[in-house]
Image 1 (cartoon, rainbow, N blue to C red):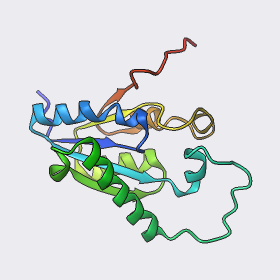
Image 2: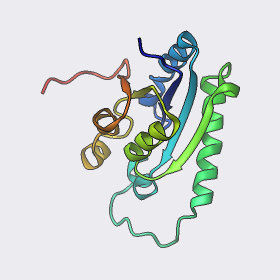
Image 3: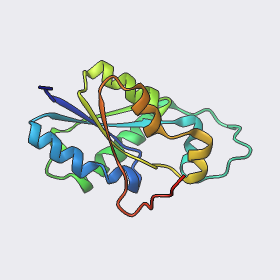
Length: 159
């Protein structure tokens, strides 16, 4: 029988990723597993992911990695305080910079994660077309089991 000691809940703070949080919390409690919450700052595509303009994406100022990381960490703290107040103190919180699916898979290997619980359709439809689905890439590359959670109000469209 598989032992689930560590569960990863990656979030981009969207409604779609939020749909997976109650399930991640419940599974962590049921299996008495440590819950890890990871946010990956995708600095290259930050404007696109937030529904911003695509053209031209030339930076006129250098992005400060430490500033981006601290801002994301503060946002992660606030997110968990608001949406998981009872578990907030016991959750391992992490913020990394890079491509989300790569960093999620790297974090799983590094922390010996047994299960990933993540939402689907985290970013806008346009961003999904241009960037691809993070959830789909994680399912393909993860070294552990992956549970994807669809937002309850997301309509299924037949291919």
